Image 1 (cartoon, rainbow, N blue to C red):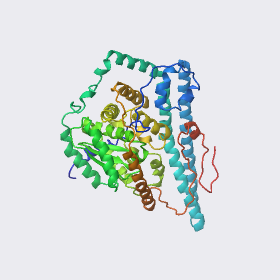
Image 2 (spheres, rainbow, N blue to C red):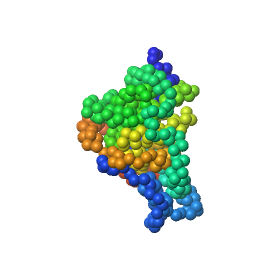
Image 3 (tube, rainbow, N blue to C red):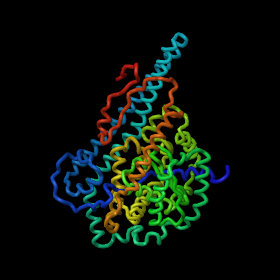
Image 4 (cartoon, helix red, strand yellow):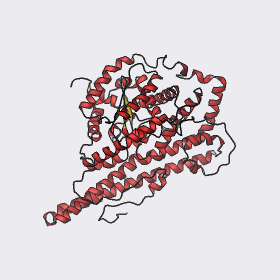
Length: 498
């Protein structure tokens, strides 16, 4: 194979690192810093505060007063709740498996004695039970643990943020904050985060070519206005960053909520991310985070760790099927539905042992670049919270499971934002963003229609089967409600409880 070596390519693909954003309300004003601790009555239980956003908790935590015993009790309660919920869905998956095996045995025993109608009914039941089994497996192994990770992070924030806040105030008063890593924010663009960025251009070009050849890149969005708008925002951020190479930006026609940078200034934004962002500062924060990866040459550094490249190449082969909508086993359908499509399904960044530190570095630099470009950097936290709380155990699970702990990211980001010099009238929303969203609507509709007409992971082996009842996630739904959902069954079968 000519061009970039496979083992290096697959490590570069690990740079499919999702968005990290910025706050949004209206055009017009940035979020105010976390206020000093204030007296306030505790109006709810400790568990009740875990349903609040990170942004609100940063402001509320200094005035809340719970005992160490209460924190410990709540921590154990969450651990017990997670264990019970995970075991419940694992048990459901086993029950579905037993029902499938029984039906397969019936097919074998009765054989030719079955009428075509009876045979088709059994096929439909097996197919639908396989879907339900996949759903239960994804919930048990990924989605539910992510939801509880989020709750544990908020519990930790309530407990530890007051002391962290006081430390930040001391650093501000003493001027010690100016000596932090990359604290020279007034010199952005004139400092060196990583030398020899230009050396990555050729490898980035080769990686893009190889990804296109192997089908790992979804097609570009065929709307010039959308492409031009996203490029303009990205270029604005890049001009106010430490990136020393030209930036190449492309919007891909994919439902995945993602953006990723390849070495040498190649930035890809997927359509799903544009749909998820609510304002320009959120989008700018995503792009700033990815530009930071290139400025710090994280792709190049990850490449040096390619000691398990064969594993990653196999993963990339699977991802090629998933990303291009190819026909695969129907059992993976719910993996896609719950956010495990694309490389997130098969690549575990923890295997490299370095992604967490790189993500924290990109968090810090990304906040600086968004701020330097005139955007409100506080949206990083609000966007993260939106994904973690409203969609965390549905659409963004694969990303959350392979990135640094929620608490660490939130606190480090809030600290960096607090240390950045305040600017008046930082941009949150623009009319150009709103126009882009209007342009995006017909693009999304056309993509959904095209996907429905193409072979996909939802293709039925037995046509016309009535689908099983599925768990429908509602934004803001407590994880406890999900865990209490009654076991569903395939049409024509009675519930099988122990």
